[in-house]
Image (cartoon, rainbow over all chains, first blue to last red; front, side):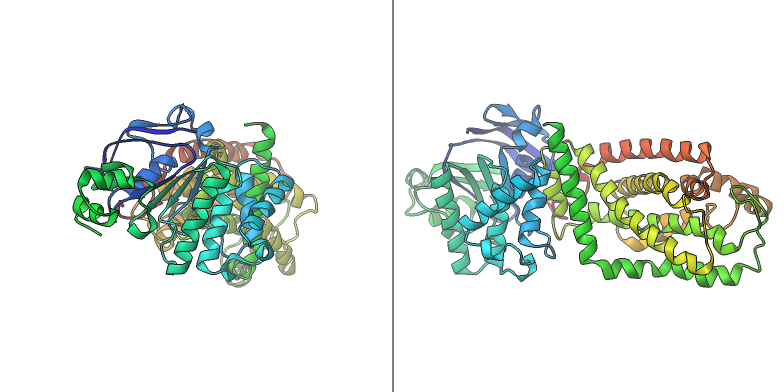
Length: 240
Length: 267
């Protein structure tokens, strides 16, 4: 599925947060959206997930406009938010079933799909545990499993590794990359941590609301005349 | 989206509300303490002060407890609906509203379903309260318990929509204490919940008219009349009309960017 963002601008009151951002994502690939805190990543995610209304520009999912056919577009998107969005007191399975119901799936269907996802994520034996009893890494996995329940073709993750230890961070990152390969999922992974991005990834660098670079990691480095992405990121944004 | 999708979504939202209710059942039990204090303590103290004459829908002299019981049913719904609606707008911690809004189904449908789900939980509490009220001899006719159901659901939808509207538009009322002082208490006291309005008219005609314009008065009267198997088209009509208008305004005005769903500072 192709995803295109055309000329997106967004302002909170007088403060512009996104300035004419355009990009296209390649189907079935891992994309890293890299930017320091305050770059506009969460705003971009807000627009992609319709939590914020588009002010200027449009987003097309498989040619369908988010502005004109929001319901169709939303069915194709799975989201993992920056902050935990699970009900801590409900069990893993109850959380998954709630999400499935919101997407119009029957209980039976929800249970079958939920169990399938949990099994794949190695969490089936925790299905009846309250989310509160799970560690941070496992909670994140449940959120990813949940985001995939309605079989979206685009998975958006907004700084999904915030608050996780190094090992869990790496595990989660690799896990999502494997999903890309096995499911043909298009992934947009927002982060400010350069170590979560590889040279061969498609990289979008956002800084102060502007898209400064868009391309394969090594191509960007070549164009900038830098050794690696960390250096590129530093030279472009003054951060890192 | 087919009707089945809407149905599954409706059931899912209801189920979640009941699961959460069950998780927090001690909190809900303690929420019953407030109306019970009014019923048992306040009413006992005021019984002597406020003589209630025979007024519809009652056919005989009634105790003050009997008079305020429907008003306290309204109070349970009022508190729950406001609290629930406020948490819909401000509750960012769990991000549960984000999950709700990510559904491809239309937002007005999602919001009304959510309000109804919260309402059903309140209605459950009202019934527990009415059972306990039997202990102080508040004994409406048996069929009244069934007849009051539509009035209770309507009241919870109306007050939920009002809460949503207030929380979305009035930024100053950021916490529950503010809403309690400026919305809940004025609505409760300027209504027929605690005293019949003719009494209010004797004391102050302009306050009487304020009470008449308060939609909560009509919700309470709809509850009172149907609990005693009397039909009050005016109370029902006004409650239903206000509900429709508030639901339309609340769902149209519920835009996440007006709320703090994305955090206080743009990131």
